[in-house]
Image (cartoon, rainbow, N blue to C red; front, side):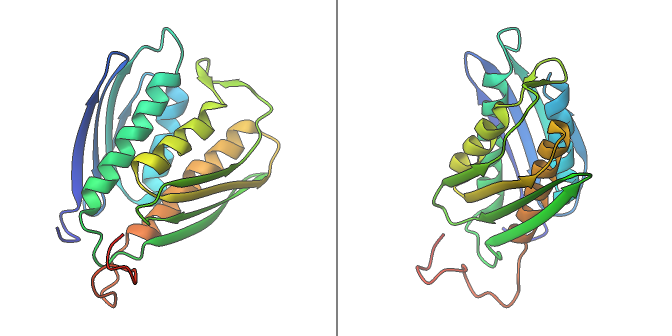
Length: 199
């Protein structure tokens, strides 16, 4: 797989959700998001835009229950698409980091596409629901599922902030920017960026 065709489509269907995601790491930056959860649509659009990814998400879930199953399953599917698009990970930087401000909020995200899932999440939200049907506690669940399915070490740390929307927005933007660095192919890297010979 070359830098020109790193793309993947993954479909995940359960008794609770039906999700198809196409992720493109280079080339097309077409973004089409339809999850049935407006706030999540906005956050995924920001992640893709600031990561310079093409991202098409079509999700139907049991949002009449709540948003939990849909949010978590989208993160699982996105992580699987990332893993598939990266292939053998030859030549990728592997590590990425970003600080992103959003008005009064500031967040740092650091990622290692190590093949070993681990999440550290630091963030508190004073507003429990945004957009009518997005429970803000699901943000941590999203990043947890993304870390596991994407086999990445992921640290998301909000330094400070007052507005819950701003805090979460800075998290998703920073994740996009950190992932862009991590997936970037460096021609100076021979094979995979690990003394183990695999990641």
